[in-house]
Amino acid sequence: MADFNLNILGCGSALPTTRHLATSQVVDLRDKLYMIDCGEGTQVQMRNMRIKFSRLNHIFISHLHGDHCFGLPGLLSTLGMLGRTGDLVIHAPKEIENYMRPVLDTFCKGMPYEVRFNHIDTYSHSLIMEDRSLSVYSIPLKHRIPTCGFLFAEKPKEAHIIREMTDFYQVPVKWMKDIKQGKDYITPEGEIIPNSRLTRPSVAPKRYAYCSDTAYSPSIIPIIEGVDLLYHEATFMESDKARAKETFHSTARQAAEIALKAGVKRLVIGHYSARYEDLAVLHKEAREIYPDTILGNEGMVLSI
Image (spheres, rainbow, N blue to C red):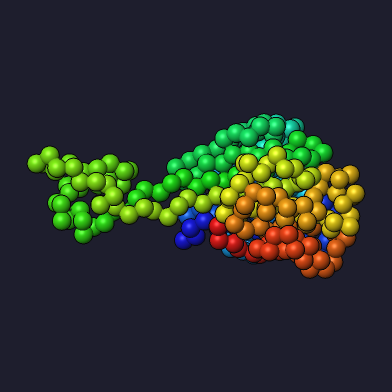
């Protein structure tokens, strides 16, 4: 079982190439799957990477450009053919329904499950989804149309019981849940046993930030500060900075500067322009600013 992994299905940009697929990722938190963007080819990559369709319950769409959402109709249809019955929630800018409702009405009639839409305010940093394991927040980005990134924040785990100590103090089973949640134990004689004597802290919760597509935007730094892994688009080289500015994208150097200023633990770059056949130049440019930069690629699985 994966603890907290990132699966990169595609990391190309708008123009199709034989080298990269359109943008899509799957966050795997202990076998609960959360998809980020769904470009063409996403289903095939899920098959190639042996990602289970049945464990996918939430899809997050950053914006309504085709390389981030043209794979949605096919994926939704496939889920129906696989016999899915549980609801699927698509979290996206409100324009998503203008695109998807006609598709659902035309191609997905009679599906055995319901598709629900959760509209995201792309201009605010806010909680957009949470379950028992995870909270997901929007990250306002700077692009040509309403766009947001996503911050996946694992919820704190309960403390670990030190069995030798609970046995020593003869702690009843009915107390275990409260002790895991941080309460002290009071013996029948009234003695208070500190929680720190009975438990050891769990592993600190992890955070992953996804930022694509966006122009250089220092305003996101307080939101992503200190994350365990940051994915930031690096569409262009610094020599094409004017083109990056014109299209509201970032250079590899700018992605690295964001990572450095935010004090993130690791950076992975992606969303490469089709003009670059050799991505080593983008990798080198980013690593000169932020040495712990990973060059994203299809099929890559990163532990968060």
